[in-house]
Length: 277
Image 1 (cartoon, helix red, strand yellow):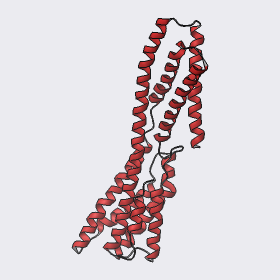
Image 2 (cartoon, one colour):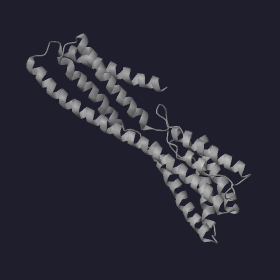
Image 3 (cartoon, rainbow, N blue to C red):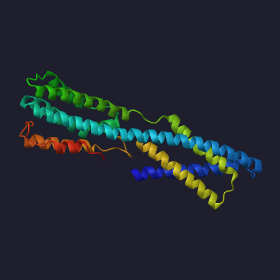
Image 4 (spheres, one colour):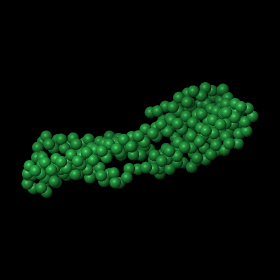
């Protein structure tokens, strides 16, 4: 999929570049005069600079948002792991209510929500329901010791982190590249290729045009791939969630139900949650 779509972008841009060049030469009919070449070079320089700047800015923005989502995934999985294991430290009753809800939450994200974000750009209400169940239980906790008070405050803070990062995950799916960008990007390729019509169609010149078209097509492909991190060809996989789900399932199994305080080392889950692909 990745190679196929990338090849389509590159070959399509090369074809558009060469076609625009030959069409401009056909419309011009005669070889341009010296002053026309000078003017074309001046126009070519300015259009190329603006076109390159547009591509660079959009590419940098999409790459930044892609990397930002990767960071937010780590924050969310770390927060889920913190609440899960703090519930075990708080006591049996809290663990019995909070840990299964969080385990179900992670399973829903892996099995359904990630696909839903790619398809509809929206979060799964079932995951919100499990989050709300865990949140409500934390709110209802009545600490009797300073230790339990500290754990409750930390769980409340981290469960809010989960909610914030969920909203951020949804925002990344709902910000497609505007049509104006594609119009400017494709129009720039056509204008630049047209300005090159003052150069004769020698083998070396046409080859250089193809190189320009191929590189531009590659950048356009990267922008397209990064635009929606949940869809192919540049989709992020929920690896951190999958690893966390495995660790939570192991913790529940080893604890024979909800995790008891001190019954399992929570460091592997934290490491899994902190994994950045």
